[in-house]
Amino acid sequence: MKPTWHVLFLALLLAACGGGNGGASPGHALVSIAVAPTAAHIGIETTQAYTATATYRDGSTADISADPALTWTSSDPSATVSASGVATAVASGSANIQATVGAVHSNSATLVVRSKVYVANMSANTVSVCAITASGQLGHCNTSAPMFDQPYGVAVHPAGTWVYVVNSGGNTISRCALQSDGELDACVTGAASFSVPGRIAMDPAGLTAYVTNVGNGNGSVMACPIASDASLGPCAPTGSGFSSPTGIALHPGGTIAYVTNFNTHTVTHCKVAAGGLTECVANAGFSLPTGVSLNPAGTRAYVVNGGNGTVSSCSVQADGSLAPCTAVATGLSAPYDMALSPTGTKAYVAEGGSNAVSFCPVNGDGSLGACTATAGIASPRGIALR
Image (cartoon, rainbow, N blue to C red; front, side, top):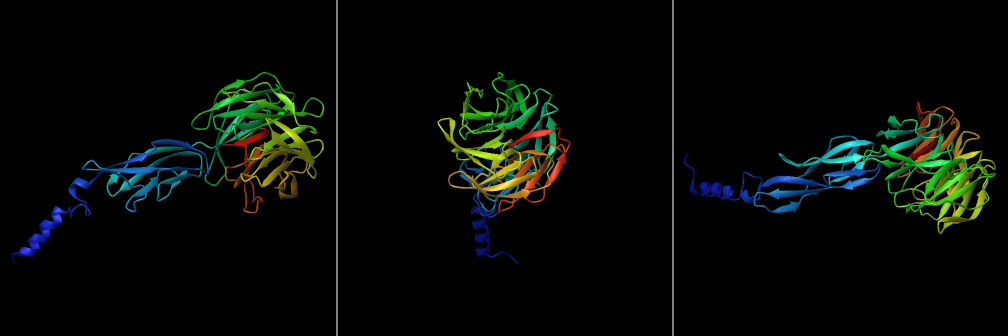
């Protein structure tokens, strides 16, 4: 049967409209997809937004990042990516982010999740740099050469570019550059300006560092301006009423500092003003406290009690005081310090008695879930996460 004239006309019309190209005209056929940024580094529990730009045969371009026909993929479980092109870091590692429409694939954009847990190993004179797995537990750890001197504390600069290591044996502080993969590089040790230093904490702007000192009688806290090269400037005592201060943490808003007093079983809170500490008041009810950390909202403080192997969770009041406090982790083996993940959903505790670091999920009410220990860490004393 010969085709009728109207069937031939319909076939010609479909061809003219690009009926063989998904409804697109030949000039507007998809040629390539470009994903940006092509390389990025982020921390665990943070996000990176990607854009997908389409180029068509006629030279025109369009943002198709949220186009329902486009599929986003991640090559590695260290990061997931949503239908709108937003990647979320869930573990240490590296992933290739790619966008696809039909048979057209974009370039592969490299996303490095460089978050690591940093552990100061006192007896070994080293710092361990440990990956974080998707379950929250510690993965592979790289341990530095024994270049430190009885390291007791470790902290990451707010900009994420430097790590500070407190050398209690040498009365110094070392600073190490952070590589793109989170490893340490080019460590430099400053002058011996302290007296049995314990821990270091920085204000959110990264302008002032506060260092606890167990020596000099009852001990002290030193305020040190941070220079542009990350070195610590001339340090001066600040605050009062301390007794063998070890742990220190600043409120996320930078307005309050918390210091653990080992000898008096207390935690002192001080106002932060003009690079110093004022109006210091002690909070009782702890047991040889050695470390303190705050959740990202600044509503809850966690105090590590070396005396009874527990972690106390305390509500932060409007005036900075801590009450009420309840034990949320027990049975720990000589715990010294604790660090929280950026969202406050993961806690890591340095246990000196068992040479381990325990991962504890943080529940919605601030309590800690069942803790899982990673052994093989040599006399951990300080811990930090970036």
